[in-house]
Amino acid sequence: MKGGYDHFMQKEIHEQPEALLQTMRGRVMFRRPDDEPSAYVAGAASRITLGGLVDTKATIRRARRIMFVACGTSYHACLAARQTIEDLVELPVVLELASDLLDRRAPIFRDDTCVFVSQSGETADTLRALEYAKTRGALCVGVTNTVGSAISRATHCGIHQNAGYEIGVASTKAYTSQVLGLDAKVRALAETLRDSQSLLFFARGSNYATALEAALKMKEVALIHSEGILAGEMKHGPLALVDEHMPIIVVATRDGTYAKMQSVIEQLLARDARLIILCNEGDERMQGYAAGSRCQLIEVPQTVEQLQPVVNIVPLQLLAYHITVLRGHNVDQPRNLAKSVTVT
Ligand code: F6R
Image 1 (cartoon, rainbow, N blue to C red):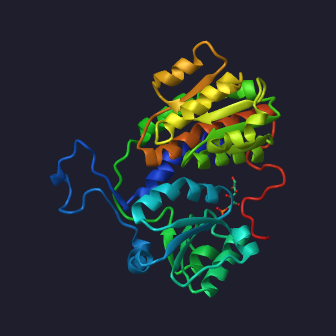
Image 2: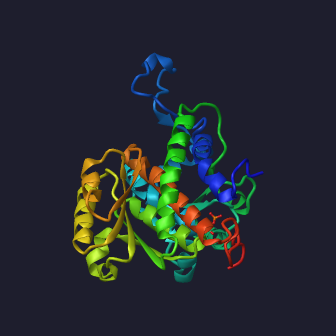
Image 3: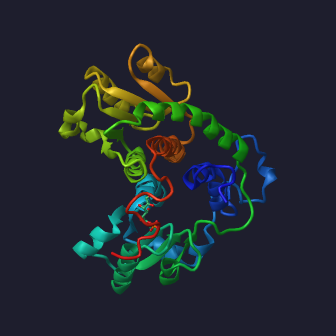
C-alpha cells in the first residue's frame, strides 16, 4: 500500500505531481510556447473549463463577493489562491475559518457566492457553515476531494478535485525527479533542525499561506512549536524573537514581494539570525547571502508567480516529514489528531 515508501505522508508528498495532473485533467487546456495554434481546435487554446460550475457561472459573475470557507490546511489553500482569484474575477474575495464564521454569525447575503473547501467533504464546522450560508440564500459551491461526501451533496454545485475529462500536458516525471533531488538536501537540513524547540517561517503575499501551512505541518507531525509570520508584520512584534539560536525559514522566491523579502533577510542577518532561505534555483543574490554566513538555502524550480506557492510547499512538507522521522514520532497518525474532524 505504501508503494516502497516508509510512510504514507512521504508517499503522498511524492504523489503530488500526479494528483495535480488529475485535478487539471480535462479542465485545463494548455498552450505551450512552442505549440502551433493549429495543434488545438479553434478557440480552445489556453482555457479552463469547470464542468460543475457551467450552469451557475452567470450567478457567480453577478455576485457581490466570493467568500471562501474552510478549516486548517484547506483554509491555507484558499489563502494561497486568493490573489489569483481576485485578479481573475475582479470581485472582492474574503476568507473565513468555518468555526469563526459560525461563532460570529457573520453576515452573508443572497448575492454572495460562498465556496466551501474541504478535502474530506465531511468536516463538521465547514458543513455547519454551509448550512448557515444556505439559510441566508447564498449560492453555495463545494470544492471537495470526495465524491458523495456530505459537503458535496449539500452544496448547490461544485468541483471535485479528481473529476474531469481528457487532456493535460505536463512533465510529471521531470517534476517528480526534481522533488526527489531535493529530498536528500532537505533530509540533511532536517538533521540540523531535529532538536529545535521552535521554528519560524517568514513570508509575504501568497506565500504567507506557505508559511502558515509549513508551520502547521511542523506542529502536527514533528510536534515542534512553530509559527507562520507575515514578514510585513515583522517589526510589529516577531522581531523580538530573533536571535542566533532560533531557526527561521524565509520564503524568498521571485515574485512581487521579492525585493521586500530581500530587505527582510538583510534585517534578519544583521541580527545574526539562523536563516534558511527558500529561493529559486540559481538565485545569485540569495547564494551571496549564504556565502560566508550561517545561512543555508533550499532551492526550488521557478514557475509562474501564481503557482510558485504550490512548488514552495513541497520541500517544507518534506522537512516536516524528515524531522518527524528523526524525532521518532508517528508520521501518519500524529497524536491527538483524526483525519476527518466530524465533531465540533
Ligand atoms: C492538517 C489537516 C487539517 C485539515 C482540516 C480540514 O494537515 O489535515 O488541518 O485540513 O481538518 O479538513 P478538510 O479539508 O477535510 O475539511
